[in-house]
Image 1 (cartoon, helix red, strand yellow):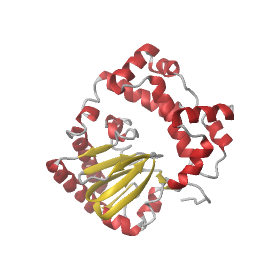
Image 2 (cartoon, one colour):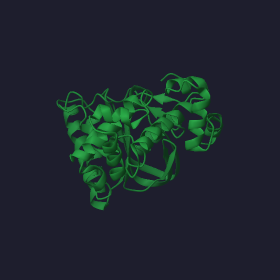
Image 3 (cartoon, helix red, strand yellow):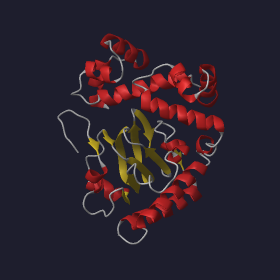
Image 4 (cartoon, one colour):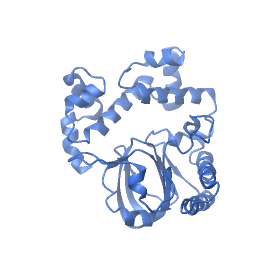
Length: 297
């Protein structure tokens, strides 16, 4: 991890897992042990890897991409590379934490976009949290306990066993009553198209800011795209694009050493004053005010 004064830490998996883990692409531990090893991770930080945490004990709050959520027993949250989070926990905490690289499943699955079938792995805050019922929680604990055991040793087919266990957990979360309307129907054409749109926005938000640009990439009309977004998300395509730009602006603004003009340019704004007006319109704060408020985040 590269440390720069007043810059948000972004951890890679090697930094987090330490030398007592045998596998480069994944680490898994009981959460209480993880907290003992990394007492400063409650402060705002980002990851270059996927991260999930299942709570089996505890209270307090966790914040993901500037949205605050209460901790609940049976809750699991999923984060993708690039998201920012912090913790405000209360009392004794336990559960399971798993960090894994983007490459873990690449050679295992023929579909490079398979994980995107699960909406909780789409990087959309609020959709990345699942609360298991009692029977689901019991199964999730069994799966994650097995993942922890497998990652503590090296033996034949360990990584494949871990992949199968993780995919079983994803399917369990996708089938959960709490999440059934978000993940279980992802093979429907409309949802497939929506996921493709979101993926394109994640790739091109700094270049293309109009729905017609994405509609052209998807080989559909702008009206079709807007209708799709409205029916499935109650938002226009333009709102989804603007929300992604604002989120990225927030992520970059918490790096306190970065100048406003540099951030504006990286987001495709050639006029710094227009970026300021854009940001304030959707957050009620100027970029400078948001930077100052970050110390309280």
